[in-house]
Image (tube, rainbow, N blue to C red; front, side):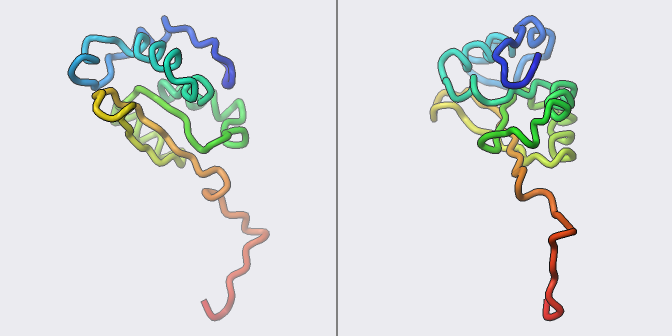
Length: 129
């Protein structure tokens, strides 16, 4: 699916393993949680969803690093290999509970697009440094 569109096919998400949610969320698969979150919390429908490394790659190809509005994407993928890939790509993975006390967690990969790249052509280091 294209970034910025809300045309995610929940059948794509259904193929992924269930998220590591506990309590009342443990029996709900990732696709259902995705749908529930975007329908109930408008901010998440506006934020890019990174379900796996392939989606992240497509997002970068579509210009994610230049179009990300508030530095955050979101994900329900807590697999260690995915988190390692997020870090490799420059994201700071942050986990957050939706509405305190619900036991429902999302991953909020943060990409400081303006602060993570040095433009060496504009860089000056004083001799006294």
